[in-house]
Image 1: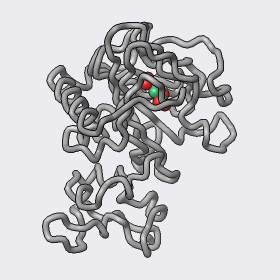
Image 2: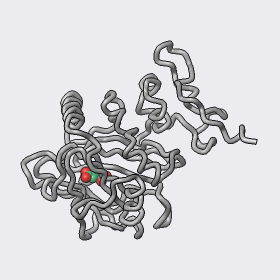
Image 3: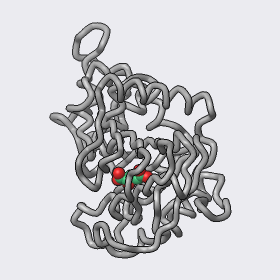
Length: 283
Ligand SMILES: O=C(O)CCC(=O)C(=O)O
């Protein structure tokens, strides 16, 4: 586990060990400085064009800018959910049938106070601890420090009960360099930190869920089919144009991948994403 302490995990299996034990790991140097710069520039453009303003509730923050549904905004964002170094770990926590649950930005501005402590799967009515159903990640686009709002975590809390929402519990800051990615089991207690500095803390919340539960952001309505038709096949699967274990998510016994509208012709057509065999086709 790598936050304020020593670096241990570097391989996928070491990261998976860290998540099994601590509930969290840090994958260092996923994005280089150029990639970070492009994402920061594009995020600033989107925030400006969409007139993004802080929310007025404690959870989203009153000095925090959030942009949801980032896959709507072009190829830079489409590269995030399929990044092999992170997706490989997420597939190990959930399984390869996992889905994109949401993709959003979190710009914690100076003066923001600490977010209430929570677990991302807290609203899912399952007894705890339970097998992972959510696996989330925070991509640092600026350095994350103890003072600028680094995500605060409660190590090993994924194997406890649910936190008292907003409860007072000792936390540690997930200190990261820009380009690093924090990955955690959705049962881990955590929260965004207070920003005591004069500079923004910018992160991308790339969240995944098991292929058999609902995605937090509705990807099928949030992303126009013509846009999804141009996505890489693996990203099409991840946003929900797929069936879990040949059954869950089917449309009249067919995979939704077969129903994507072909962007070029406007005809209903297979998207290039070879439909997986359905459960009924197995003898
Ligand atoms: O911004 C962060 O570091 C964490 C945000 C978070 O946990 C959330 O919004 O659910």
